[in-house]
Image (cartoon, rainbow, N blue to C red):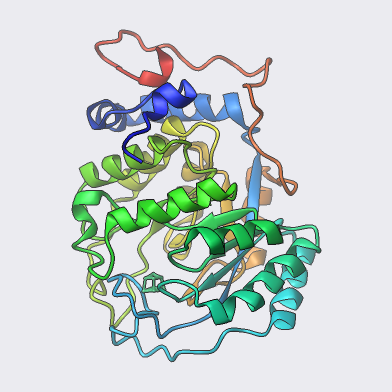
Length: 353
Ligand code: SF4
C-alpha cells in the first residue's frame, strides 16, 4: 500500500498531520464555517442518510478491543449467541426499511468470518439487497476470496474501523495490528466494495491522535465512502469502563475536520448519541455529519429511539436521503463557494489551495 502515492494516483491532496492539526485548531467559529461551506459544496445540508445496524452474531469475540462488550476477554457479562437465521435478518431488515432506513448494516463479533458461515452471510446480503436497501457488513478481517464473494452477492459497503491513530492503537487493541486493519481495507477496496471506516473518541487518546486517525483515512488511496465517528459508550466490565468523557467541543471539532478532509464522504454520527444533547447533535450536523444509525439498539449498546430521532430531524427541518444518494461527482454549480482564508499563513487549509 505504501508504494502507491494517493495524491499522484487520484489528483487529490495528500494531507500532512501538521496541516490537519492547524485546521483542527482554527477558532471554533472559523472551523464550523469552513466545514459547513465544504459540506454545502458537496451535499444538501438538510438531508441525512439513515442506517440501521443489527448484530447478527453477538458476543464471544476472541479479540480484545478494550472498548467492546462483546470481547470474550472482558467481564461485561454479555453472553455469546449463535449466528442469526437468515430469515430473521431479512425480516428485521424489512422492518427497518418500513421505518425509513435505506442502508442495512449487519455486524458479527468475529475476528474474521469462518468458511462455514459464509453461505449464510451471503444469503443475508442477497436477501437484504432484494428489498432495495443498501447493504453493509462488518465481520472482522477479510481475505480476498471472501471479499469477492460478498461483492458478487451485492454487498455495497464493508465496515472496518481504524478506531484511533496508529500510535495509540496498541493501547486499545493487542490481538491485531493497525497494519492488519489497513490490509483488510485494501482487500475490501480492491474487491470493489465501498469502504466504511472511522473511529471512536474517548479511548484515552489525545487530540493529536484524532488528527492522525483522520489523516490516515483521508490519505487512503480513496477516502472511505462512509466515515463513522463514535463517542465511546463506557461499558461496565470493559477496560475502558472508567474512561474520561470526551469534551463535546473537541468532538464537534473532529467531525468538522473529517468533513473538511473527506468532503464527499458520508460522515456518520454513530455510537454515543444517547450521551449527547439535541443541541450537540445539531452542532455535529452543522459541522458536516450527515448520517446516523436509527433504532434503539446499536449492536449491544443503547441508541436514541426512532421517535426521538424523527422529532429531532423534524425540528431541524432535515429530510432522509434516498438509498444510493451520494455526493455528486462535482460540486453543485449553484453551491456557494467555500470561504477563502484571510491569509494562507493564518489558515493553511490544503483543500482551499
Ligand atoms: S470490536 Fe469487534 S473485533 Fe473487537 S472485540 Fe468487539 S466484536 Fe470483537
